Image 1: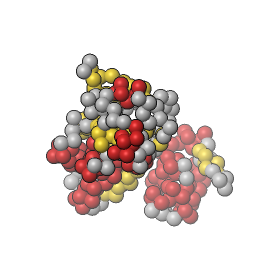
Image 2 (image 1 turned 90 degrees about the vertical axis):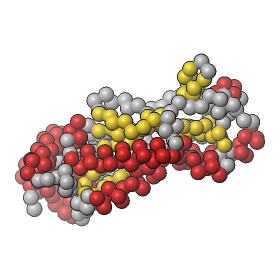
Image 3 (image 1 turned 90 degrees about the horizontal axis):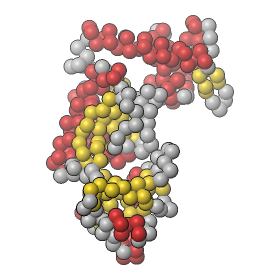
Image 4 (image 1 turned 60 degrees about the vertical axis):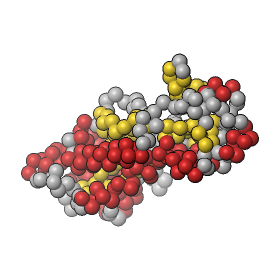
Length: 306
């Protein structure tokens, strides 16, 4: 078993925080995962992880070794790219994150075509509406809606996406039809809010006759899964703010109805987020360019762009 395999295994265990998770990710058994870590620790003469039956934590030596281990793998990838036509024949695993709605409706449907074109590439797609950390979570790139907070990361814009405020006919019948953001707030409407870690208040950016305005909204329903908010809206429990592509079928069927239409939401940016290092990986660039082209066309053809 190669020393390089041991390093790769260590990096995934460190990033995923679990022997079993790393084994599944690398498609090796837990016994092989544990054996590789033990071999590496024996070679280095230090403990890289503190293990208990319930947890696994990197030691100070493990934390120090992680940075160097990543550099080793990056150097190997760069060297391979110099001697292999990896742009035409990329191989290896891609680790990609996306919001639930974006991933389910825009990314996942395009994945089979990409993998058919590049049969030596495997994809690990993680869908979550929480904010992700590309570096600590070992991601090659992440799709997102909005503006990223980390200025050290690179951004490639895909499109501006239209959004809509909507509710069910049953909710409107019981609570009235707000036509503006002022109606929304003053009418005491139940707003269904997407909860992010650290969020202390919710503000919906709407376009008024006097320009963009942010409305502080309130509601008894919060969730970190955007699809749950749609389910609650369909159930008549409140008003949700969503990208149009996530609720287009419900709007067409009449299961949801646009509200506050005189002050519609501002469009939101959809983009890719990646580190400079990841952009050097040809398969990452190929996947990103492929998805940007496909998603951009879907949004353009559907008329859902801003």
